[in-house]
Image (cartoon, rainbow, N blue to C red; front, side, top):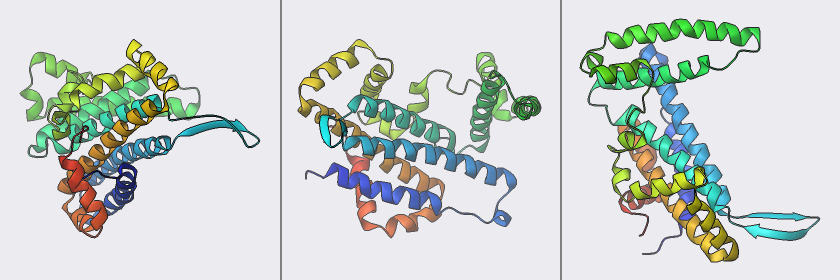
Length: 276
């Protein structure tokens, strides 16, 4: 049955924050490390949500005009492609860091520490212009040293090859590229893999992106065609994210069950591909 993609999009955008916000935990019930971990998971969830909301707004089309005179109307599908790639990579990171390794707590800790190390080391390369930022960078040097020391004492780290250990201590959590991170995620196996290269073409302004825009600028129907594909991808992403999040935090399942329309969309888009 043909579905109203934008209606499904809005249903999932309504359910998504309800699921994430329903995981409030009393600090007495969890350790400090678990509480910190949850704030990181929520931050990644919010990042993904913001990308998807922006993509939804673009799907309605944009216009340029002054004083009530419309000069131009278009669907900015290249920007939707850029947002779709950002959303896809955010979901891959979420799955890699917080879902795909839940069966092995040591591996999950290893991945998360390497991820944190990457961010802290990246910030060390940024110049501090204010005394407060200089002090923060100095404090974070100590944190970097502590993380490196903690890593080397993990049994999961000891099992790595020499090259893998070097990558871990350098903060290269994406060593092997996004394909390695994505490979364990079910969505990557459902027609997403070839699309990822196309999304990257729009991000990098490859020739393919130029000829697609040239074609679409002459024919509005092409703009709508590509827009629908990114909307469908977003629906798949949200359904997989909500499912993974509820697996990580089982208490959220009651929220999903309380929203029949949203729950149905999750079930439908878990099984659908981009061409359905």
